[in-house]
Image (cartoon, rainbow, N blue to C red):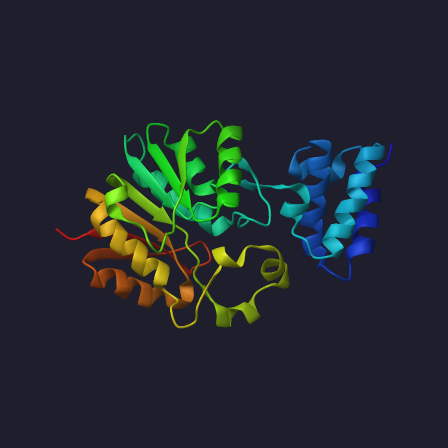
Length: 282
């Protein structure tokens, strides 16, 4: 029976030209933990032997990673706030920054019976995690992509979360079609097309551009339209939460304030302005 270190040597040899040593440590742990159902941090000490099917997947994963496929797409899943989510090229891979947005909402709404709407749900990670952590909440979520909604529904079922999903365009939401909400949250597309050149090829090649990018001349269009919708769709005392582009933090704050909201800009753990919390004045 081989030690995982033997497989790691093969893994690193094959991928050394593509990833840094630190990246390879993490990728290897993720792969082996998934294959053998070991705890992530115990992979290197575990005595493991891959059967023929596992060996085949190990080699397949190495080839996919060599072709710059995200490990989450190779495994078909991603972790978010302690839950497992199916992912595909149709949805964004959940990110740690978004976990901080979710944590903010949870911390401010514990033990409350509230109505929540997640706009642009993608994999469903925000809506499903909120339902998991705020079980008394009524949670709805929408996305323009039917493929994304199908994945979100699958994730809701897997995580035993009752969510109302539906398709709609975040840029053309009609308040008359919706009830009032205590919380509206969105992590909309916010990366200007001119910023694409600065992004990792791994992201731009594999993740849906419709969920990432906005036109250079309209970088705040989603915040503009969603804030207008929230003005009419939030209950009295309700809150609008956004994940934002740190490069447009002040502009986003000014835009939402101009509509009559009082706005808090909030930094993430990397000290970047990453979140907005907005309430209607009065």
